[in-house]
Structures are given as C-alpha cells and as structure tokens.
Image 1: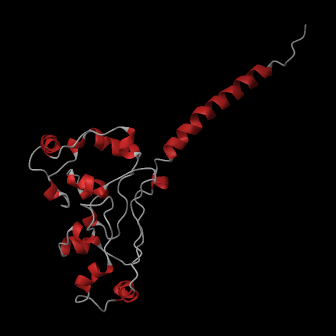
Image 2 (image 1 turned 30 degrees about the vertical axis):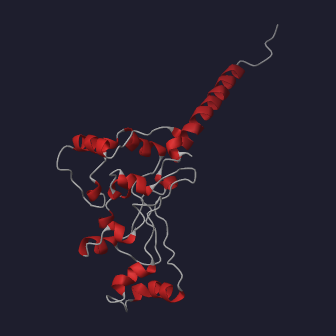
Image 3 (image 1 turned 180 degrees about the horizontal axis):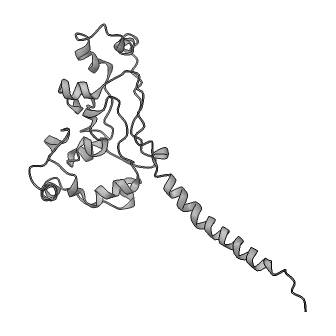
Amino acid sequence: MPQPFPPWSDALARMVLSIVATLLVGVPLFLMWWTRTPYVTEQFDQVAQPVAFDHRHHVVDDGIDCEYCHQEVERSPYAGVPATDTCLNCHSQIWNASPALKVVWQSDRSRRPILWQRVTYLPDFVFFNHSMHVRSGVGCETCHGRIDEMPRVFQVEPMTMRWCLDCHREPERYLRPREAVTVMGYVPDRPQRELGAELMRTYNVRRLTTCTTCHR
C-alpha cells in the first residue's frame, strides 16, 4: 500500500513543530526581557524640565538639602515638587533678572504652578509611600542616584519589581540613619550589614515581600 504522504513530509512536520515550540517559549521570554530594558523602563532618559534646574549647583555649591524643595517626603506618599514661592525665597534676590527664571516669574504672576515633569515612574497598580521609606532609613540616593552630580535628573534604577524585592528581602544592605537619608555619597562608619541589622531593629523594619505590600 503506497504511503499517503511523501517522504519529506516528516521533516516538514518536525520543522513546523520546532518553530511552533520555539515561538511558544521564545516570544514570552523575549517580551519578559524587553519590558525590563531601558527602552520600556525609561531608565537613563534625561527629562527636560520647564526650568533648567541644575542639581549640581544647588546641592553642591549652595548646600541645599533635598527636603528644602521636596518638603512632603517625610509625611506624604509623594515627595512633592517645589512651589514657585520656594524658588523665589532665593531668586527674588539672587539672579532675579536671569532669562532662565522667566517661567518662574510667569508662574508667580499668574499664580499657576510650574509644570515640573515627573522623572521616576511606577505603574499605577504599585503602591509606594515616600514617607514610609524615609522613616525607615532608605536614603534618597538609594533609589534616585547621585542627584548632586546631575545637571539634568534622570531615572537611575529600573524600578522593576525584581529591583524592589532585592531591597525588601535584604533591607540591611541599604538602611542608614535617618539623619543621613538626604546625604549624597553616604559612607557608613562600620560594615553596612552590621549597621543595617541594627537599624532594622531600631526602626522596626520588616522584610515585606507579600503581594499586598505593594499591590493594594
């Protein structure tokens, strides 16, 4: 009895099955990788702001602390952005005629806030509270990098779930005294894990890795 299919059909079937299996596995793996790349997370993208605010000058040269502009960081889920009056506390007297401050003066006259652009994004389904992290001894530079070295601020870390969990699993690797939270270039005075373990007990920091910690 003649065979219903030609001899090459077996090779074709094996090739098709191999392609299908590769797609079923490869496509999800590719998408998982792609969503973690800077193309999606916007890591390292420098964000243009309505006012050319150079953190290097204000932090290093003028010694302005993070909380002077981000006043809500200790008591709110959001760090907040500086109000126009905060800028004019200094610039009503210093460089008040500079063209770089045109947007600031327009905001002051119109009583409309400056439209600062968000730099670091988390998905809408992620709960994050700045004040909780600051009170626990998580430094600004842990998440935001060396702001004092940036002429234009960009997102330093990928802000992926894996990145967050690395800290939540071992918070002793990152904690510092609360009074050093805004210090840039912080160096602990003893081994970090030893200091971090002590601060975990002092600040009652737990290893929170359950889903409801961040997804509420």
